[in-house]
Image: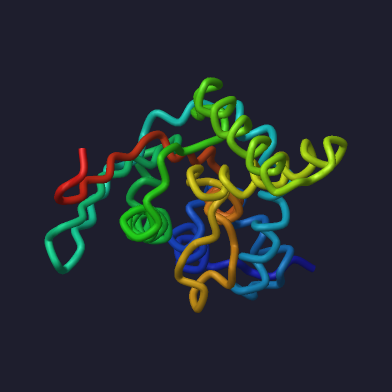
Length: 203
């Protein structure tokens, strides 16, 4: 026999996850009315659908700002989703704020790997190969060394590759992992579209 699901519980689940009304009702029925279990069910189902969701257009969202207490560093970041409902979701807004704070502290240069210009990649790779040669490494291992240093460099400059600096809150998860989790929880495509970071004395 299906558990009787109250409209208030469906609304509470929708407010917490941003998932659709029917999805919330189904998850609550599956969880026997247990809200926390229903959230888990939505997350599991959401993760499975994350790849499909990435194809959908994210044309809603918000622009969030963060200015450091010193007034010397400021960030604007645009995070997009599919509906205004999710854009107003507290979890979505918290994610956008935390991304802005991370950008202020970590200073990435690009959102994703795709944004890194090929000439910048080539220049870095040449430097890493030359460093390996200068260190007297055999030719056959120089490329592997350069590849490893290249990965490390991308982690320094690409936002989605970086671990969120608030380890206590996020436990070493990358921005991409957090974005994927949010997409799973909300049932929508979530995209960090662009950001700009201002620092006094830097151009």
